[in-house]
Length: 543
Image (cartoon, rainbow, N blue to C red; front, side, top):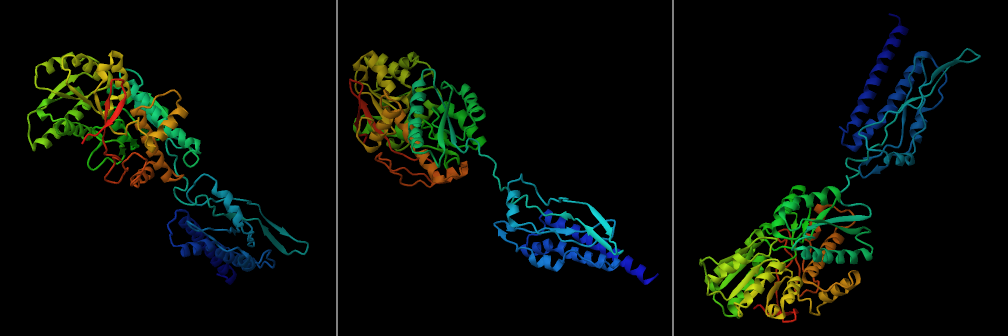
């Protein structure tokens, strides 16, 4: 074999080897196999080195006398490699000069760093993009017969089409650049509709106050509502409406215990916030607390305990002189269990079952309850776990027969609505009726009450102050405080962390509000109120 042919074959093998190394290095970079910045930088420089080698081989093989570009000069002129938060950023490009003709190697002008910024806005794509700028390869022979080879490069360009995995986060449901969307499933029809209406008013007052001050980090807080009529059979549909149609971020202010038994699993399954429900049921007060569930109010157990202790210690009754008038569902069960627990605590252990007088949800049929009451001559007080119409009907139909009967109600009854129902029948039915509250008396002059009344007059002129809307207002204010603590990047987990950071929040209620990883009920305070013959509520000391 001649020496020239030997060198020619050697050069061809060298070219093949260099091309293989080039492709392997490009593939290694594209799949992100190399994590070391220094090694990655070495691999990124490799194409330029190989290009130089190929150029030298081709020039030596054909005796080309002219090179259009000095490779070493091009390398030294290339800009430095800046860094980004995700590692090295390649600012250069390299050319691989190939062709059917023997060609000299030409190094392209490096891509300036400023050109990379345009690539950052392109859709994320993993790996390298190989762009062919020109594949025009040609050979020309000058007048002197000297072969001058010129080539435009087929460039292998590493494009920065992905800065980092998850650089663009997926959108958070219910959160846009302009809005934060919350939903409430509550009765806006039926016998408990006033509870839903008032709760919604209170929350909207708090949201409107925040929105008028520029929103939460520039976003307006919106409340969407769905009517479940206080029927669990309709709650699933209401929750689906809020989730699928209204695309809410979280739930706030849902009304009722039997409906919560449907709404809560929905919220937990979808891992969305379930905040400030208008119920004191233990269903929402697990130990340790459910991650996504936060309550403002005291529980029914705490309300009924306060009522029983008041009846026994302040009014001097015996525990067996107390009966429970309760809705025949989870709401009534929760209240009844609270009374039974309080009686056991007062008597130091097991006692006879407390008399329970039932009625059916969404009715005012109290006939059976009255029949049962007449069978027990010793009853002097009734703790009522009812809605306002049923409670009013029971009081009206038993007051004449039991003129000295003490009637107490838990806060869910809806104090204003109860007062109005009783006054329709006569002032003597309203006089002396007790309602435990989870907010201070709205007739007072505390900072919280005055702020609430001013906002109510501004956004809902003509609406009277109400215990339910006051609670909704407090719930909305606490939620707004949590949202403000999150900052502009809102998601459910960040909001939960922010809410759990709320300690000793003073809203002028006379009690400090606290959350924490093991405490998802902000307040444990119970206030006492009693109606006079005009239907006005006055504060009483339950102790």
